[in-house]
Image (tube, rainbow, N blue to C red):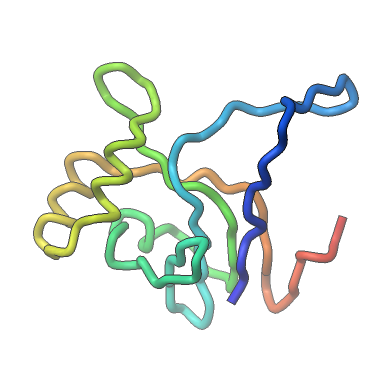
Length: 126
């Protein structure tokens, strides 16, 4: 399976005009794998968490693909990222409750990288 790079800790903030910075998405890392018409979702620790996000495993994907990204939820009232909503979902075990939450508070999947597409491992490409 494809394991994403983990974040690193630095003593000082990194700031350089040669780089473009993006806002922090306060969610959790997710590998989306659609291979041989089967979709699986994996945590950054390679745990199969497909059952936790039914709203994600029915995306309109026809080709074999593996994506690296982040799951996040948006608070409908404030428009801000709601980390607690995603954390709560990770703790759910009851199938009915998972489905109820996915309908009332669906998550978003923000893609960072395409790791694999149509039989080609893209991780070494630039």
